[in-house]
Image (cartoon, rainbow, N blue to C red):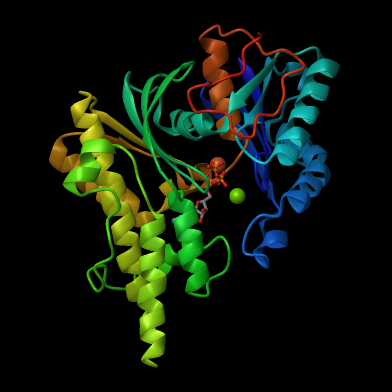
Length: 347
Ligand code: ATP
Ligand code: MG
Ligand code: FE
């Protein structure tokens, strides 16, 4: 089936088109530059940008794929989680296109779409797989039994998301928003063992209660304190070493807990998803540790890690293939939609 996916949960307007698991188009318009000077996404600005970009992005995607709206078998759209106003623009567009063309509508979960996108490049997921979802707003360990509906949350961050920690530390280091790619690049020039930053929730007592949970706000504070102390001494800040040491702390905890979770649940495939899955050290360390543990590691190419429409189309394609019932036309935007709700039912 030919599936069109619409994404608008944050600052990327995305339209993707897939046939089965074959990617035909993935057009993304980002308003990130309009937010950069604020150091974070401004919801009102994002909504307006989606409104302006939606129709042109849709036209480009249909053009690139060489298909017409009437050829499409179903329209999938991000229903949540995300910014309410931003989500509403995508939902309104998807409903309008679905009604006008007489196509079924699937309201899908953005987080599960971050996981599903991998199948466009690496084929069907072994069942079960262990998903490590690391993005700007979420950090979750997932037991992925079936992309069409059975996803269980094993653990998550108790405070900041991994991407949020990257962005906050980057801001402290004077890097532009979003800082993830800048820290990634700086870290490659630095020494990851230069500073021993804390690994959140890894002590014996924390592990007993929060085996698969994460915490990154203490790490962010530790970086800020370390830099302040340096500045008080009038010493120069070794930006590359700070970036590398911070990044090592993040990637160490993420990969250690993900691999423990996979082992303890008898799962042999680990899958990375979300914007932080683009991180070079995370991919490298996960590969090293998966090799050592005898696990198979999968991750999407960088372009598919950050927000896009192809990921929404990919999840829609799995839902359609599994015979999941379409969503109602009056589905709402749900800014805090839980990862276990893969698609909005017809209820
Ligand atoms: P969510 O998916 O939780 O709703 P989001 O959609 O805003 O949040 P994504 O687009 O999935 O988040 O990811 C954006 C995040 O990924 C940002 O925090 C950004 O800094 C981070 N990021 C992007 N590339 C890299 C990289 N190479 N290294 C580390 N972080 C990165
Ligand atoms: Mg974004
Ligand atoms: Fe995202």
